[in-house]
Image (cartoon, rainbow, N blue to C red; front, side, top):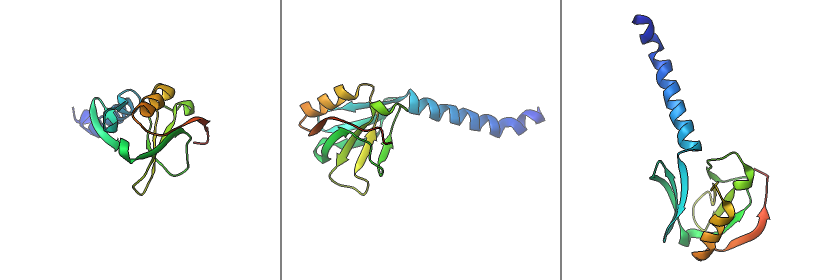
Length: 120
């Protein structure tokens, strides 16, 4: 039993790491509602950006940005350029970037068409 107590911190660290990896790659989703773009982890809002604060949206990946990515696929990157804040670029990776941009466009956000960058 004493040997297992020494392994307890390692076991806790492995469980926490597994939870974080699952939350980032499988638990994170993105939703557009009437007023915000929301980043959700297991259905709970962890970050939101007001639609009125988004200057434009495109498929680029600038150098200085705030990341909320749930995929390592560079083709899924969507950059929301905010009007306010110290870090104006907000990077997300929705499952279907074109449908996500179309939804933003339908809500009145200016979206650049056909601009895809794999620089990030």
